[in-house]
Length: 158
Image (tube, rainbow, N blue to C red; front, side, top):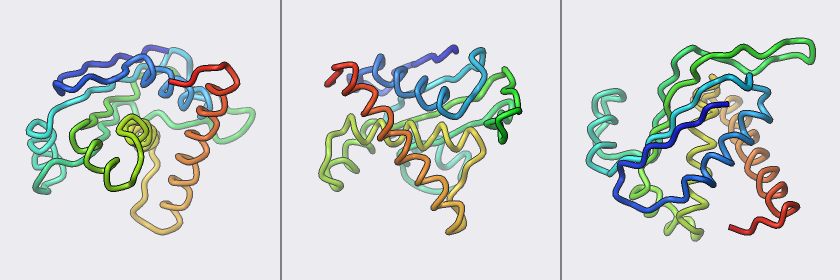
């Protein structure tokens, strides 16, 4: 699986941990091992420009997802995953930092949440309707919990 990280935000971020999380989510979602994902970290000004351009909404947002090949997780046990380009997840660490402070947890935890959220959007999940929101946020919670459990089991406390 090819996962590229470009940090253009000016904020120091643990890119290795982001790649580990992304790989975990994609593996758990049974995405083909040759799939490609790009993670872009940008500053608030760049995120605001993207937010206006693509969502027609003012101000910077926390995460945007730009799908490419519309890859979807296999639905059944017999379905085979397909290789392809997932797309880009764009995250703004400055917005994540503000949200983390409000939520009462670490910025890194907020970045993990946003990355997972963005990947699920790339895979076709949404939260516009209550049922979709329950499904997506439930998956998001499960992915993060299983990743943390895997890290604890491995002795990784970063």
